Length: 595
Ligand SMILES: [Zn+2]
Image (cartoon, rainbow, N blue to C red; front, top):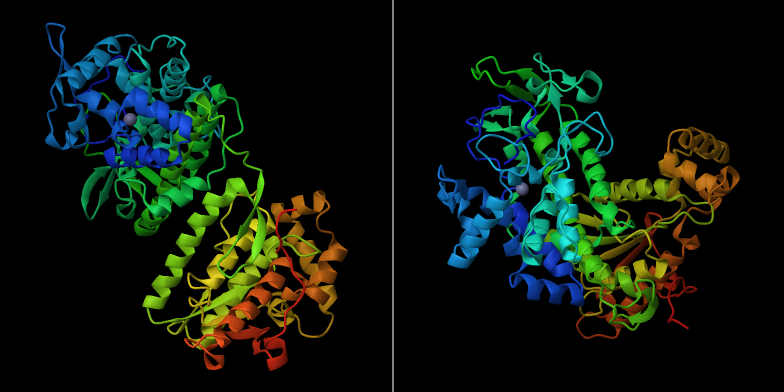
């Protein structure tokens, strides 16, 4: 549940019905479960020793503490009032763990000014930076020394053997780990960091410019209602819900996403602030396009209430679901980064170390050791995409296209040509019958991945589990005509047209601007590439792919199971290739063992 810092003296608690937990418990379990998967050996051992339970189970603990009530005689008792908040707390309902919950809340009840009936511990779950800001700063309204950023840093201090800074009271490393697991999750729920402040007419205001008026506080969206066909719900609660397909643990898709989250290269003490700033950026997306009006039916006198309006409610929640998946993955990856940093594994291989890796058909590459897991996860993911299309009865094609900024070509254009070419091939054969794997859209490896890393991944996809390319019916190699269609070339003044296209694009495409500034692409190089060369004939990866198609068909010809009649069809530039080309190999690209 998200409750704002008590800025107004007359703040009433009765408005909260306890419905809006920060990420619901499933979200906290997912974040913990992802981190469980990503822990390195030393951190894994420390978690086991200190906590004795998985991070997945630990995730909801700080919300379980909300069920500890303070009695009039000054004692504290764990007394869950709503059975549904007991679900994730079952493992803490032993005598010893109930005592721990009560002890934690009693020590963190009156150590900050929060509100009359609730303890200070409930202020640790969030911060409320106005969405007009692009980053988190302790100088902003809505932050405090005991907000979620402060709470994460306090837990880190205890795990490093230092005392918790005031006002926090953290008894031991176990308590610190229970808290950290939860609060790193909260930090990635964008409404736990970015807050919208609204005036009486529903217009956003910036308390850092106008001064904080408590009646503009939306309590992280708890005071904003969504009146939809399903009934009325707090906007905050809708954000706490996680997409159904995510489940309650770390599924393969979430682990894949988490492995793609780049580590944040900052000292330990800066991480919470840096990640809070990242969540500020995400909160901009969460509020983009929304408008608000004051709820005139609301009769409370201690605060206002508003209604949210969406340009297209279904489209909004579809896109926010994707954002939620990304945020949950980030939360898990970053929790693991924190713990792996606090307890480094000395024996871990250097992430940039190279090693030779060979595939089923004996093609070898010199790959980056640190990317092995990401490659394996992506292979699993893409095989599933293919299997889904195959189950729909479609013939499957592989699109080979240069995907780099190299030799005058530019990645941004090539990605668009890849999508356009995929669409055109599917249109040509009928999208009910043919599906093309867009290698431009599925090349999801970290930015430091090399050509060899990518080709080790694509080779495994191409060859299939059996080494006969059995997941594919045809390979499509991109040629000059495919690129000419993209630029709308007609055979007259084509190079001039490409020069004009470059001028227009470089003015608006910041990625191209940076490539030019880094001297990777020039106007003349771009023109010559796209007018004269644009084709798989000038790409390292596509050279490998051509040779792989040759090896796979050679294997099919030699196999009783396939034979000449069941080779993989090969197309280049829109046409089938001649028999001589069909069986001919070319120079190698990224292929080769480490020296
Ligand atoms: Zn929370």
